[in-house]
Length: 111
View (tube, rainbow, N blue to C red):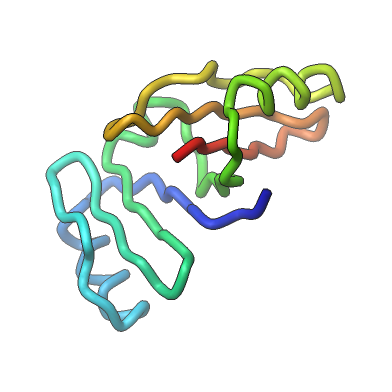
């Protein structure tokens, strides 16, 4: 398991796209009204213009896992709380989000 995806909620997608393209030095591989994604090495940085509306208060780091439901179940057993149950986020990918007792969030992403 490793953190390979960071999703950042943004309020102004065109401005954020320009900012991140400049800072990261790469063009987006995905450029849609609902998501702009950049790849830097094996790291993905995604901009989500709907993130704030879905309760995101800051970037969410996603661990890539083999089985999101099993990982979610294990996290809850270990003391995490479910913030978002497993759901399809497109192209057959499943994602869930958990929160630790200190209020920190971690995403689980199954490719």
